Length: 89
Image 1 (cartoon, helix red, strand yellow):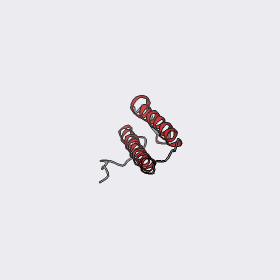
Image 2 (cartoon, one colour):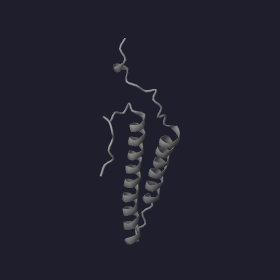
Image 3 (tube, one colour):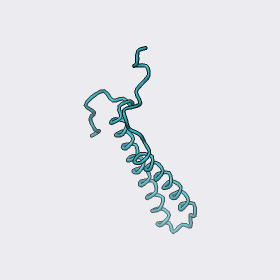
Image 4 (spheres, one colour):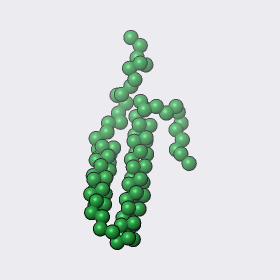
């Protein structure tokens, strides 16, 4: 069941943005685990000498770690980013 948001979701809401980014990261981890486990299973089952699997997994793992660093350390979820169209001037 998807999470319920108590108000209209918008990317300008810092709490929603934080939740959305973490859910996207969780999806990224799940896809990484599913695809890489399948590739490594086939490689092991067929006793294949696929040298590209190490590079494939390593590069994707590096991207996953970079995504995690951004989500958990760099991203700013403060309330300072409000849409400029809502300001009347």
